[in-house]
Image (tube, one colour):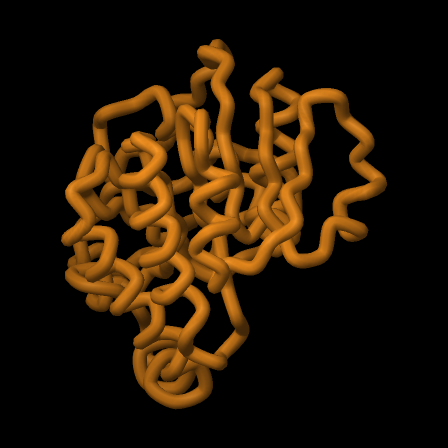
Length: 221
């Protein structure tokens, strides 16, 4: 039986930065981190999308992920970096943005990075069904998939204390903490879905865990 997430309610308060803060997973990370009492820097090109949060623990940093100087400035004095950047199916933002984040972290002396990629990369390709393997990632989302592949390559070669989180397809809904984690590519009985809120929750928990340090971990219902 695949292990399920044992949820952890007591967090050490940290200063963290979220790249991709206005995306569907990134926004969940920001909201949940604030609820847990962390000090959050949200890096975004569109600060107005976060104006409704109005939280004293939130700092909004307006910047472009391609601007290496802005990324480095925003990363200074952070304890952890969480990356949930995306670009639809353009196929360039994730890898290039992650490379800038890695460079910024090294300059700023920050070592802990939790990055969301996708189920289907590496050994997890075996978990995909025909639709996802050949239609979605093989054709419709081919550019995005290759972008994630290069993104993971940058992470693996970074020398940082990274954790790569590979979720299946996103759904809406609240945190459940009821899903499979750390399974190998031979597991076939997956729904290939997971709530964005669960992905964010799992990523935040990795800030205090070394279980998947310098590893890629798959998560899915």
